[in-house]
Image 1: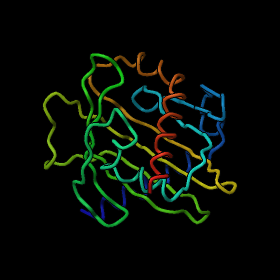
Image 2: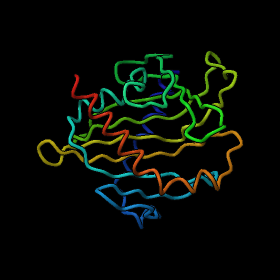
Image 3: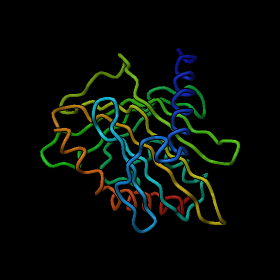
Length: 210
């Protein structure tokens, strides 16, 4: 089973790198936002929901940033909407299955949870990367009052481009499931910039405590 997990992570990592660095026209990405050093591209995924590629710069230590991002048990330290994170299975130091749960940003919508197969690694060019995808485990059944979302692919890539400054690329392809109208989900993409920058700044502040 562990070999299967590692193969899945190899595939997701390859896809994430391709999506992060392809030219927008090559990947058929549409620019939704470009302001204050934050660019958000989107395109429809296989279920008609918008997946996003967010690019921004951040003054952060890339290793410390990835230590915080990779460890879902620490997510609540910088994400006020996160409720719970725990390790389900530790394959090895850099490949872990996490359970996570968080509040929905939409009023009157059930909170979401997930079971995520997650990897962190450093690429040959020095880029730090964390990738995740959902897995189904009998040992982690659905919880009452939570809707189990599906992470099709999630990735954080951080690379130092000048001393103290990093390029951050975030890939998010998630199906929240449940009964939220696709139109409502898709309409919120262009308004994500402030929320993403706020989240990344809180993450950066957390690394300063390391």
